Image 1 (cartoon, protein in one colour):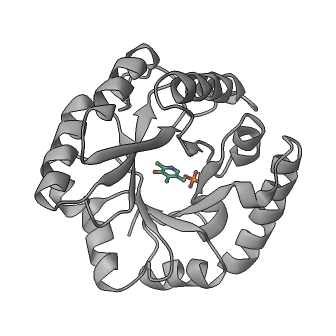
Image 2 (cartoon, protein in one colour):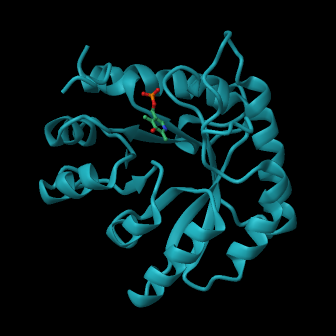
Length: 231
Ligand SMILES: *Cc1c(COP(=O)(O)O)cnc(C)c1O
């Protein structure tokens, strides 16, 4: 199947999942996770109506920006971001979804201030408490959210998570439910209900994530096909 056929199939699934929660597909942002796919594939996704493209690696994003791979849609950064690469992402990606430490918040603040811009971000939550994964621990999130609010050049638009790799079908449903509860809580108590995005759900579980309250899904494989790691 082509990229545009894949996107059409996913849109129908998104519509159905959204309808089960009293929403419509228009309430859900579909982010194409385009890592390891070339500029031509990105352009194909744009032509097929993808809402956003999301990139994981700074070097790859910089290269593909120079090839105008993302023209026509907003670009998000969704991967692990090292502090020494923040300068290459702030002001380039309209939303940095993967901000999971106060050190990274500080670096983004500093860089955005120099550019006289406000950088939109999501706070990443390590909902599975996995040692190898970045993101704020759920019980550190309130403090992080309050801290982020004090930074004048950073604006928090919501939360993002990458749950553990599923060991059984529907294994991530409890994590999605906990994220939704955290989102509602933080939104009410810290952000006066101004948050916009709960970013969760990938190729294998985006419908379940939407049913749990996600309004932004990041889908790679189901759009672009399996990534070729040998290249
Ligand atoms: C690659 C990636 C995705 C998409 O994963 P698929 O399983 O290929 O859909 C989503 N989010 C992040 C942060 C990613 O790195």
